[in-house]
Amino acid sequence: MKKYNHTTYAILGILTTDCKSGYAIKQLIDNSLKHFWKISYGQIYPTLKLIVDEELATVSISSQEGKPDRKEYYLTQKGEEVLKNWLEKPIEQAPVERNEVLLKLFFGRHQSKENTLSQLQDYKQKLEERYQTYSGIEQMISTFEHNKRDSTYWLITLDYGKRVTMAAIEWCDTTIKQISKEVE
Amino acid sequence: MKKYNHTTYAILGILTTDCKSGYAIKQLIDNSLKHFWKISYGQIYPTLKLIVDEELATVSISSQEGKPDRKEYYLTQKGEEVLKNWLEKPIEQAPVERNEVLLKLFFGRHQSKENTLSQLQDYKQKLEERYQTYSGIEQMISTFEHNKRDSTYWLITLDYGKRVTMAAIEWCDTTIKQISKEVE
DNA sequence: GCTCCCATGTAATCTGTTACATGATTCC
DNA sequence: GGAATCATGTAACAGATTACATGGGAGC
Image 1 (spheres, rainbow over the protein chains, first blue to last red):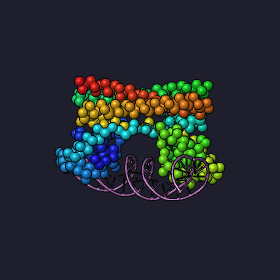
Image 2: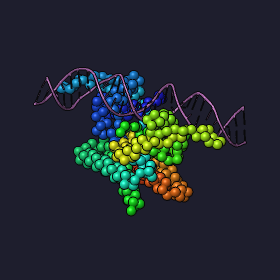
Image 3: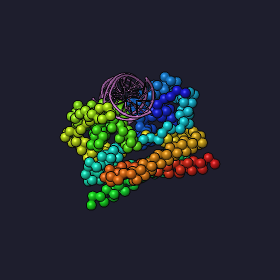
Image 4: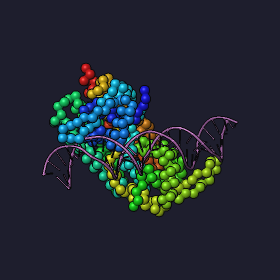
């Protein structure tokens, strides 16, 4: 089976939801997916074009009252097969996250401890804000979203974000303590 | 102060260590940095050229016995200032990691539970292998590296990797249990 | 008319990988 | 001579962001 890039698979996946247009796809990403998957319009529209060229979906124009027309994309049989095939294939490798803080820390020997500490404190604060964001979304889903089938997977991804973020926060704490002690 | 990209800063940082040539930079990355920062030759050599053009470093050819000549790069005053400036600047945002497993899971409603489970088990295994790798390196450093100043920062970055990986493994366990229960 | 949101799209640019080309030196 | 390691480099391609251009419709 022909290979496509990750962006294509992500968009095919989104097209199985209620989001059928380029604009709606972007909204879904900005509302829900952005914590682990971002796509810009500069990718979305060209990719939708490719998807139609490859006959993975068909387009039709939908008129809406009070709003401009929009193009709606619907997966073809072939599109569904390509998506299914990707969903069933194990990932090639766990992602290697680029981490600028670790990079700066690696050069820590050539910095003042005070600067290293302030980097760590800043990082910790950003992580705590992120954790709060995740918790807030979680609360909102638990409170308002009673469609269990939808919300379950949503909550699972949030749980991932929270756990990993919390582990990083704890690392910050430990490291800050350790380096502080060395300053004395 | 003029802005450069992350790759440039990373290379400036590496040039403060004993690694002074393009080849040596690549070795350092493959040996130590690759878990949170990868760079290919296709970036290294052009960036080194840029660094010299911008007068952040000077080059000289170094002859070695029994090996081909190599070019050695040394930071200029300006290069050191640019590096220091970057090291002191707080990061703009904590990195957003693309996660293909979460993406697939997000579309989980449209998959069989069995497939979701097998994705999770595969992911867990990859994470466990990674954890073992980190532990192995840690052991090696603790055993053989007695230069405390160097190894401290080294161990801190490894600790980060271990904590975050372990959190992800625990998430896998919880999620696998939860989804298994739903299958019944 | 102006602003805001809805909606689609593209061009320029940046970032990064992969594959290839080249050649010195050592050891077998 | 051949293989392995050391060493430098580039061209083609892939992936992604940013900024811009365009325009419909609603509400003030």
